[in-house]
Image (tube, rainbow, N blue to C red; front, side):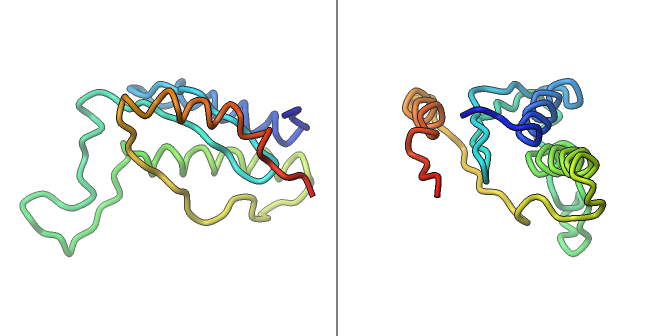
Length: 126
């Protein structure tokens, strides 16, 4: 996959994630014309933050800063700002609202890495 200027922005912002967030390591990733596949390794004690208030007060939601959602929000936010500057489209949406995630077992990693690397070969350019 050859990246255009928008794809290069996405790549640069994705790679900056490790500079911004301690305790994460980027594994294989592939930027596609309309989506991104990536594996992130998250480690360290600070990543065990609950999304709910301590002492069982589940009605009182708090937004944790150190979780996968925060990583993805930060990446999408920074990418959106820079993409919209490049396109001259301030405030325009860039990403779908959510993302698909899953915890991987070590034995799955080789196959999923291969799938990600080969994803451009399976992509149907319309």
